[in-house]
Length: 116
Image 1 (cartoon, rainbow, N blue to C red):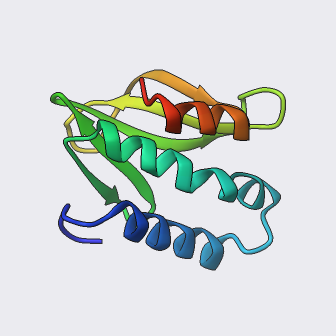
Image 2: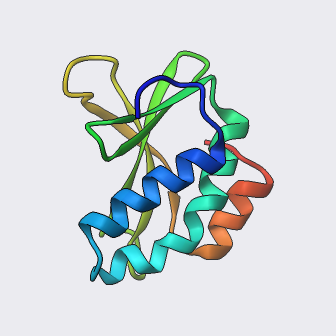
């Protein structure tokens, strides 16, 4: 998706379409799909800008710091979403994990009070 001027609804639609087209039978994707709208609405409150990188990576910037949202198998008990600080360099090297979302309740808490 080119540009940065799009709504949370459009971001959710595009991102979910990508996931379901490319990972239709993946249990991890089905598990987190219900969280994505909440997470994207929370990001929308925080972000100065956002974009999808490499056709699959949800990235955003807050006060000059860049982040990406990614699925992390290591989050217990069953995997979840991490918000990871990234560098503004080619390849977007990871700096550190800023927040983990392990379940729907955590996604709701992030939506209600978005913080990294």
